[in-house]
Figure 1 (tube, rainbow, N blue to C red):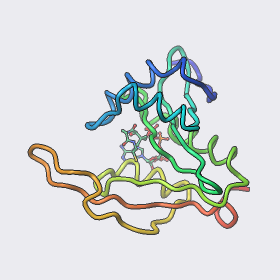
Figure 2: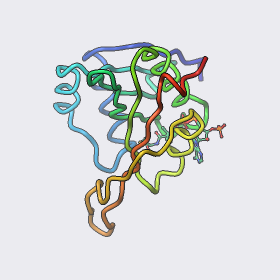
Figure 3: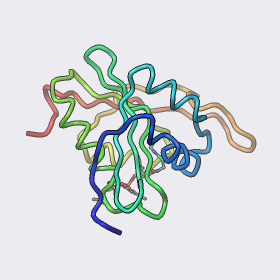
Length: 153
Ligand SMILES: CC(C)(COP(=O)(O)OP(=O)(O)OC[C@H]1O[C@@H](n2cnc3c(N)ncnc32)[C@H](O)[C@@H]1OP(=O)(O)O)[C@@H](O)C(=O)NCCC(=O)NCCS
């Protein structure tokens, strides 16, 4: 695996992003939904080595930045790619008031990632993730990183 770099990208990267999305999420987004997000002003960051290993989709809403999705291909996990993507976002959004995201209560890997980066729980959205066959609905934890108070030096 060559040393990956973080770079911003546009619609030309969406086919690869969509493929990662389908592998990483039980409820994946359609290609159209990803295109619509970019048209609505979302930003796409990639972690790229010999191929695209991971991505982060975010959107600024006034003085807040929302993390819409972050995903790393299973074979590339545990190499710091999600951390690198998040740190790149945090650096770029230094002047925003805060970064917000939602995470499944059961998603231990993601919750630890965000905790390590300094995110704090500010709320819960009960049954935010709808029930699927054989699985009950699940709460989302709402996490925030206050950029004025918590951001890295
Ligand atoms: C969650 C996810 C993005 C982490 O990506 P990653 O590149 O493997 O994460 P990193 O290597 O940067 O790990 C950073 C920290 O996250 C935590 N972490 C990552 N994977 C973990 C795991 N399997 N178990 C426990 N903690 C984990 C650890 O605290 C880790 O720090 P450490 O290496 O010092 O222990 C990845 O597992 C993924 O794509 N999951 C599927 C999609 C998803 O759940 N996205 C988040 C939705 S909110």
